[in-house]
Length: 140
Image (tube, rainbow, N blue to C red; front, side):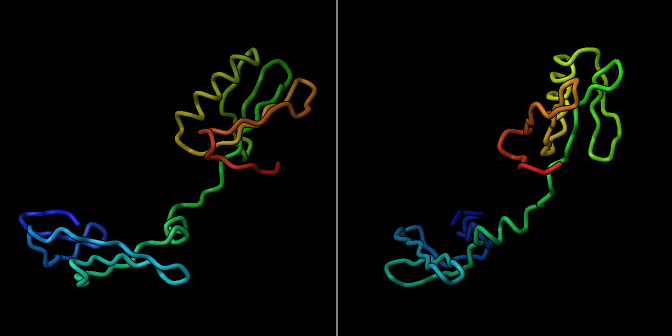
């Protein structure tokens, strides 16, 4: 609960609460197997109940976008980075420059990105995920 304009309100649902400044005992209780409920009680008397969002409900409301897939490959005379539909993102003369530029682009994009890097021979060398821990493994 929080104090707003001299009145206490529930932090979760915003409902006004009947609380005086001398009441200080509050408890929060939850139960498993049922929707989790927040119970505010003062001296054993329940003054408010509201449902807490469950972890699965909160995660299902969040966007579940699959990470974007970028591919860095050697093509004829330059390193070329393409997105998952084949659009060229950038080109570079050497691999180190290309890797640095792609890492910077991936971080700046704010999206979850899997960057697959191939060698000049076309074989898989490495997969990087940006930002760390956010992009998940994907099959190419």
